[in-house]
Picture: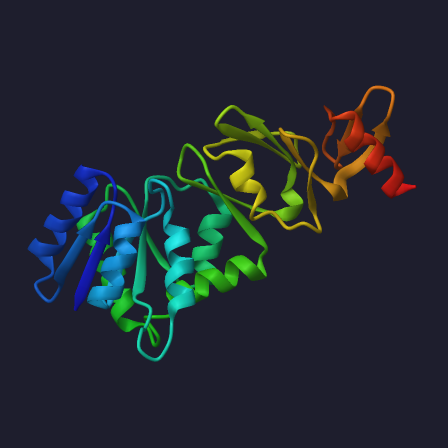
Length: 249
């Protein structure tokens, strides 16, 4: 069985190589990659049966790679099975997506027993190569949006996002209950994948969820965004306030 490991951190990468080599003689590690871009090239070249994929990666994360290989699936290229590795377990929707898509994931540092169980589960699947397509399908069905955060990946439904504000080279998401999450992405990058029917750019430094607009104050140039949990007033440019007032009128 041909395997590719895609992991940007040296020690977890070397530990996984050693545990696979020492305990699974039927596995051939055909490539070890430090980022998803190199990983994608090697997947297309080597046609592995299985990949071990870190979720949090530089530039593009593991979910991005899943989307790429899912879209490439055709008669001449069959998606490999995926076992994700992650350093955290507190992302509710991420784990939900994995379970719904029947995708395996391992929490780092990866234990020998957990690794063996994941590999055995992969071997016993009726269609072990469908994990990438399944993840993409589940994310679309659940309307899940993913963002790079400190732990790795934050996944949220559209209705959970109140607004997103620029903070230098990063951004801050305020969710429906008023809590905030730091995101390691520029606002412009985030805007490209936000659904236009739900979200709008309100000036250079703000994206707001149209569904939660409750009050528009032309004099103060503010908009109140409110859920059943919280109401927050945000500053917006004067021209945006007027545009919103006219659209709601």
